[in-house]
Length: 105
Image (cartoon, rainbow, N blue to C red; front, side, top):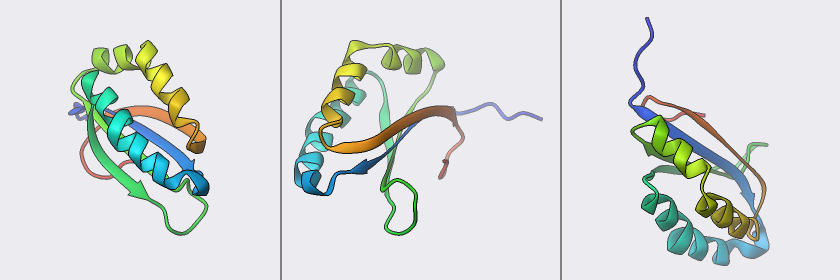
């Protein structure tokens, strides 16, 4: 039996460039998160990988419906804010999954 998702989750993963750490934090908290929130997403989590081969950052943003997620991913704001993020990170990738609560990868 398939459980109805509580919404949708956007998972971002990337490596923060060591030389850009301070500027990265200022950008993410001062610009990136507010832009995504203004488009209807809420930050659900931020993880740091200290050991292993996984990307050192995993961020999650959630919304209630597929239309909101599609609107965000098709927007010029999404493209622009990720072009700015690229100054501070490498190996950026993202995916959208059904949100079911708790930790998801």
